[in-house]
Each structure stands twice: as C-alpha cells, then as structure tokens.
Image (cartoon, rainbow, N blue to C red; front, side, top):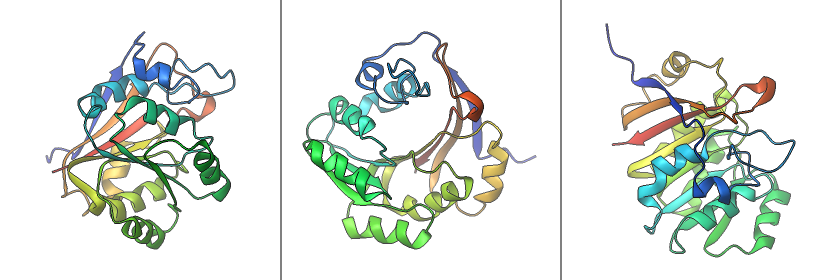
Length: 215
C-alpha cells in the first residue's frame, strides 16, 4: 500500500500562550484574542513553532485574505523590519484599510483565488518569490486546489504554502485526490488538526491548516 503524501497530524498546544498570541489578540488566528464574537483558531502557537526560525530573517511573506488588517499588524509586529509583507485581498476597501495603516515594508495587491488566471497573473506581476504564502481567503476547497496549482511556482525552495481554516469534514485523502499530479514539488505536506483549550470555531469546525513545504 502506498503511503499517503499528505500526513494528518494533531497538534494540541493545550494552554500555550506565545508572544505571537499576544500580537494577534485582535485576530481570529489567536486562541487568546480578546474580541468576543471572533473565532479562536489555535494557530498562533503552531506558527510560533513553524515560523520562529524565520522571525529575525529578511524573508518575503504573503497573506491572502486580510479582512480588517489585524493579522497584517500581527505579522508586522512579529517579524523583523527587513521582512517584506505582501497583503492580498479581492476587496479594494480592505486593501485600502491596510494602506491607510501605513505599516512599514508592507505592500498590497488584489487577489481573487476563484480564478487560476488571476492567481498566476497577479503573483507574476509583483515579480517576487516567497518564503511563506499564507491563505486565509474564501476557505473553499476548489480555491485551495487552484492555489496549490498556480502559487507553488512563486515559492522559494524550502518555502511554505499554508492554507488556513480547513474544515474537519475535508479529509487529507480528499485533498490528495484533488491534487493528484500537483504534489511533486513538495518535500513534505501536512494536514494539521489544531487543538487548544480555547479553540472555538462554532459550527464551522474549521480549525485546520494544510502545510505544503517545497523541496
């Protein structure tokens, strides 16, 4: 029997409270966020582990799906000032909100993950390659497939594509089937089920991360 390429793991950070959790106290990425109606995805403790070695290096980081800009502020506070951050969204008003904040070394760009052509064209137009591409956009299965298909070419060797808010009903096998023929560029792929005592995503039950690590 062939071993699956996408490995399912559970990371339970229990009561973990990292500095990134505090930087993200207005973001649903933190299980310690202080916004009453927000989900509390337990991602920041996991990102502290995954991204900690890159924190003080001049990397290029992209987030797709920026909502109120709170996560962009979190990343700007976390990474060193030399890190270039690219904030992408489909909504011009959300792009404008980040631009108005004038975060240093942050640039913005439009992105629509429902279109393979737009994904490829808009990444190509910026002319950058990335250490990290993080997707927090529409949380649609087919959009995840499109991103893997078209954004992988813009990752540096050893770079990571991180896709957030994976529904627990979407299994690793479902992704492996849909991504057949697209996984060869990756050294490792993980379906991370994130746990924490404060985990909350209501009926969505979408506290998962797909992590693709490029060879």
